[in-house]
Amino acid sequence: IDPHFPKPYLWGAMATLFPKREMHSTPVELVHRSNRILEAGMRRFPDDHRFPLRLAFNHYYELGDPDTATGYFERAAATPGSPGWIKRKLVDLYSKKGRWEIAKETLLRILAEETDPVLNQALQARLAQLMGESEREDLLAEREALVSQWRRRYAYMSFDLFLLIRDP
Image (cartoon, rainbow, N blue to C red; front, side):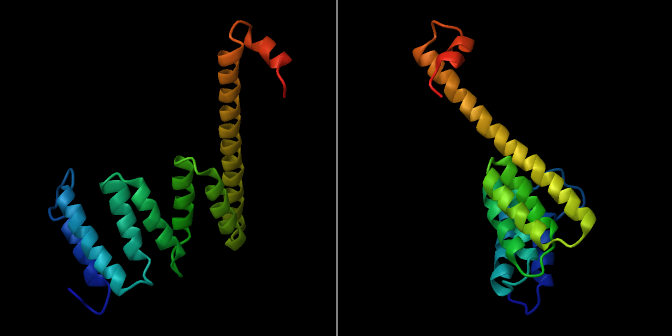
């Protein structure tokens, strides 16, 4: 298949993925076949965000592979003219994977480009939440290191006493 417009690729991928009216789960072979059609479309139309986006959906939702899906979401988000919600989805994916810094950077880029004041306010709230999650992760890691040091060297004394006498 090598049509000169994207709809046959998009339709072919969807028709391959869902060949019956009622399906409770999609066989993996059909997902891979759909992905091959979408990849061919992506090669033919590299500036169309729909191909990497649908590949991302297939990997994330059908195959349960968020790592591969993230790469396709990134490619879709980087395509000129792609909808802004794709970047917001990336922020969520980065957050779920504990990649706080890249989630914050992506969100800051989105904030810089956003002109809608209502959406801007919601994005700022999400940024505050992300910063809290990141700092919480740092605090938990620091706490774990302290507990580990206490158990390794000073388990004979209370943890409270260890906190008072330790070198900062």
